[in-house]
Length: 328
Image (cartoon, rainbow, N blue to C red):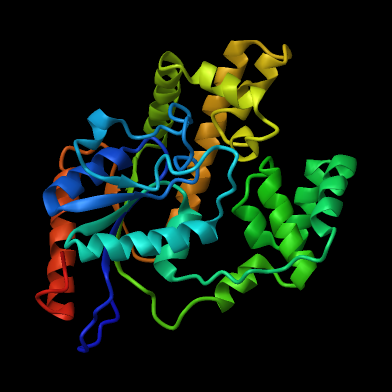
């Protein structure tokens, strides 16, 4: 909110963010049930059909009848970018608001949530012919570590937000830099509007004890294994040439050495737990750099009620500033 006395007609949006295994799904559903909301998944992998266990996709039992958008909308072969997400989510926010309901973003992909709420505009950059192929050839010749080091030197901020093993995103960032001479971080700053498009309440979930977060992550990996993660990962491995995004996603690539006879299964499971813990640290770093996040204790006995009170206060303020017919 901008703090002025002028009428503010921007749509009101609530977001539930934070690292993996902190209970975002359950809190989002609870808020949706209480305030008449619909959930927009802000997860870069849950958009894909057939990848259910490894992405911790919401189940029908967990959803409790609450509509979930941006889930199961594309085949795993399809590419999907942050620009695609912001365009789709913006349309969904309008549609949900038009139904008199509250849009609730739920997810751990910080780039998606921040880009949407900050109103980042993505320009379509045309790369010179052959640049993408040349970068792919460089990757094969020089190796991923050298390409990531080049990105760190050219655009440290972009590199910090990309895992070194996410070769596709590393190459995309280098492609942008070589094609335009500008860092992705510079483009982001230049593409911000004077006013953000939404009035947003961002609720962040985290554990005061980092060891508790890591225990939750390890336990969730064990539950995923019981639920059939290995077979889902095998499917991704068998289709890794066409499922390029999934083949580089945490939850699947850790098992590739097992399928190739290079590592025992127990080592791969341990590797997945470690990769998930490291990912959670990166998620926390991202969200802690976002302004205005209200942090709540994950799993706390009063967390849901605190979140509901914050949401009620936020919506009441939105209604006062936007007019009685403006808030859900």
